[in-house]
Image (cartoon, rainbow, N blue to C red):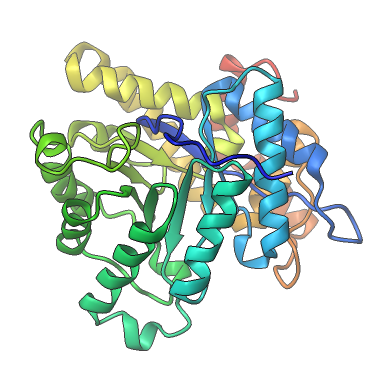
Length: 342
């Protein structure tokens, strides 16, 4: 049963968000909701907030109905475990503006608090150089969505479409239902320029949001620049690495925030950033299948991606698991989380 759309969404706060993988049953590729719910709760316990049906969640491989099932399952699991104030961000990007808006409404009815939207790369040849068309896309989606919307800037998944800092800042100032941006372009300079506007103390009064619980957050798409982001007044990250090492990623965010206020914390933050940065680079090259294989090793679930994405072979999994960057991350996570398999 669909849930009522909240008048005011649960608060969107700075911190660590994870694009949750969608787990599939062997053979049938049906949704494995038991593993999915277990993983959502594992991350919530570490202080990581969920993003569903994003790139890591293979949103492009899911039907509308499956996206709704995941949102409802996550909300039930979170509420039952006492995480009633943890917001759900749902991926709603599709091919057309019309269908994207439709999915925003469906996600809201299912219990999502926020939507995150990527531009389709199918017609990237037309869109990538057309600033007005791109601005019109997010403006209309934000205006017509019943829940606040985050911009998802990921050139690798949108045919090379890469929004610059000027356009993102224009959208932030002109669209009061936009609640942030995820920069999977990995551009720290872009993050710095956007934060110069949206993290300024005057921004909330000059450009108030439609929903008071939905400030405009500037979030990295990787965990390898959390320390530089904190010093630029960024707000954290939506990072796939948080699936593998949630406690470590949250600890790094906390240290980075402390270091930005107190230089005495900088050395510890830099040391952990080095471990996380190396691991993020190494694991990202293994993509979705590699991340799922690591989850299988660490927590006992993971499985395969949905076809046509290929699995990783046994030798590749072993090499990834034994890579010194991964071993350093696993040891850091074990020191903070006793649920990691020995």
